[in-house]
Amino acid sequence: DQQGANMAVHVDPFPSVTGLGGVEGLVMAHKNHWGDKAGRDALHRTPVVEVKGNDLSTPRMANIASEVKHKGKSKLHISSRRYMFSIATLKALITTPAVFRPSLDMVSDLAYVVFDAADLTATPTAHCVALLNRTPAKSFTSPAELEEVISAVHAQDSSAPFRRLLGSTTTAAAPGAVARRGGVHAPGGAGQRDQAADAAGGPRPRLSGAGGHSHKQPRPQKPSNGQLIVILVTDNDATHLAVQLSLSVMRPGKDLVVFVTVVNGELAEPGGRELCRKYEALAKTTLTETWVEVLVKGSMPLVETLEQFVDDIGGDLVVFGSQGLAQGANAVTIGSVSLSLIKSIRQPVIMVKANAKNAAIAWDKDKLKCMVQVDHTSRPLLKYVSAKLLSAVRYDRLYLARGGATDKSHQESVTSRRLLENFGDIAAGFHYTPIKRPLDGLFEEEGCKVADVEKVHIMAVQAPLGRAVPDSIIKLIKNTRSAVLIYKSNDAW
Image (cartoon, rainbow, N blue to C red):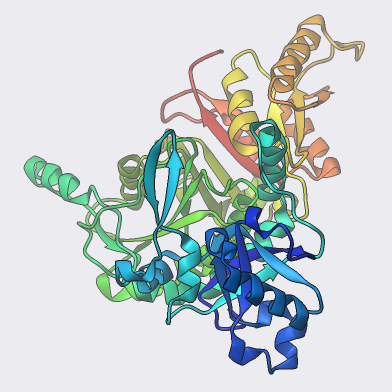
């Protein structure tokens, strides 16, 4: 971007002109740039052209290669056949088939016409730069190296500093990319929902897409192997804390994050969209796919509007902040929108209070800590936390806490010991080494004290399906300074 290039090729040093017959391609700079000393000293600053290996066998090209070697102080650079360009740039370069110089390739006595990406470096509209590693780059040349390549790519994708570096570059280029695409379309499926609502005679919220388009536009496809995370956005400190925590939960390349807010009228849509995009910019730094949705409130209650949207879009996890429940034991639960959402939404919910100081986390530096309540029925909760929230590659910490685990003599009971061991075996199957904590008192009391000492980010509990929330969970929400995950299930395994 700094050099104004629209494509790049990765090169490796090649110190000799002998044996060019086995070279995939020779990378050379334009002749009119050789007069610039900076062009000779910094290869990546000079526009280059790649000559294919098939074209290097002629006497004329051998002489040219010798001349390049002399001017380059006995150094040549060969192509690694790895190119970088955007789809928009590729379309602009391939304006006609004449940009290619076809070659023939023989495979099993059959001749194939081959179009090579190296020819694109010589097109009039191309400005190609060469990228050279400080150390020789490893090449994937045989199936035996597949395991090593997968491990290297996985380690790179799991590197938070790498994701932040690449994400910051992507975020900076996002406005121009959106403008070239003509804006972002709104989630679809709304037309069918509207018809169903009209047939039933019921009210419905009006959807407004992230780009200001009609609510009948198609929505992004739900991830096949990841989660669709819905983040409810309001203008308060609790939402900011909830978004910061969710950055550690997002998995790039797998999850889709939808930011949604509800406004009272169409005139308030631009403000609501701007609020969502402020948090969307934070999520983009993790390289996770994002989406913005603005709902215009109709005659339906707010909770029902959000519940219907989460169901319609197929959300897997709902995250929101709570300002009203930050008063601790004095918090008023009657009429609380946050508690109403917990009761109504059947998907897993992460609620973050405005005073949840333990929930503060830097996603690219800190390890996520989660405390799971150990109970006879909470095995589905443990499996969900291990598979969907925590990352073993990042060495996240998993705490297993069993309330009332000791008898009158403060000795751990046999039942609690067996439960903790069983839950530990389940966690080991997901490559975690959990920290087991038998508690003298109740989980919603003693567990909060342990969470404060260990700085646990999320306390996870399982609730039965339905709209009833046990008093123990309400008490936990009031007492804790961590985020709370409520996972609803009636299954014991």
